Amino acid sequence: MTDQKQKPFSFRLLKTDGMARRGEIRTPHGIVRTPAFMPVGTQATVKAMYPDQVRALGSDVVLGNTYHLMLRPSAERIARLGGLHKFMNWPHTILTDSGGFQVMSLAQLRKLDENGVTFQSHVDGRRYEMTPERSVEIQQLLGSDIQMQLDECIALPASPEDTERAMRLSLRWAERSRRKFEEMGGPGRGQALYGIVQGGAEPDLRIQSATALGEMPFEGYSVGGLAVGEPQDVMLRMLEITTPAMPVDKPRYLMGVGTPEDILESVARGIDQFDCVMPTRAGRHGLAYTRFGKVNLKNARHADDPRPLDEASACEAANRYSRAYLHHLVKAGEGLAAMLLTWNNLAYYQSLMQGIRDAIEAGTFEEFRARTREDWARSDIAPIG
Image (cartoon, rainbow, N blue to C red; front, side, top):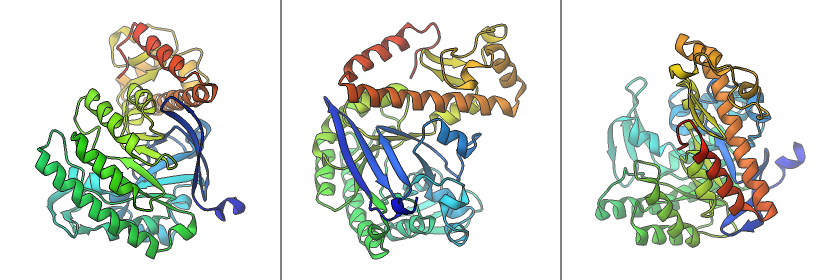
């Protein structure tokens, strides 16, 4: 690990198949194989999972949340305890978001201006200020490998005027975030800061944002402001417009996405990194993802079903426990239900990502994409989505 920590952040594009890309991100804490799905560890934990389990399933990177960690236990305390990697016993790559989305969606009594956002904590009511500089400072205290600029993420649909205002504010905040990141020595420690493309559902604004950010020296670029209520076809159309305007030699991260279908279709449009709470949240609510669709274990139809979720899966949660037993655990409110279903869901997501990477390497991504969609369509359960 010592040698890795001396290496700067880097990205290598290893293979393309159409617009689909297979690559490799190197950080001070290891290699991230792309396309990559990043399990969400909002409060320094992937809910209902041990860190070793998350790693064993194939996760090279997890996501931590700046907003939640600054409120509890605080970035300063985590720094005193040795940083986020040590604190959560995850010696591999960590990405932290900027906290901006949570400020907009969770915090109370928000006030946004050119300087940043002042808000009241949803935890204890205390008032805080989040600026581009403070967001970077918190992420530096956490010690994450990949960090995000502060941006304004507006819900869709939105007017073109409000969308442009937020996009241009996010560009100004990108410049301030980058300046603070360099002042604090992030590049010298092999860390990365990503810029975030905004522009809502306005094609011209998306291109303007991507072009302007591409002229700034970020280590990677994200597509933000999607998966915020718009239909899937709108999201995919914005990706088709946006990714060609993004640098080819830097990783591309679609924030907050998503379903297996979203991921498959976004890879086809040039995206390298994903994160979403969906597989873990679904697991806590009785929903399993499988290669043949979603299985709602709350449904009575499973009460007498002796079959496992997927006998061909390498995951023991999928191949060793009957649907009848899982249904019983869910209906009884047992904690083991969340543990097993989250385990199954993350295993399925990581298996999907490995299949995608293998197909791109073999030059058969379109065949893999069609076959995977056919499997979902043949399901006698609910269609995946």
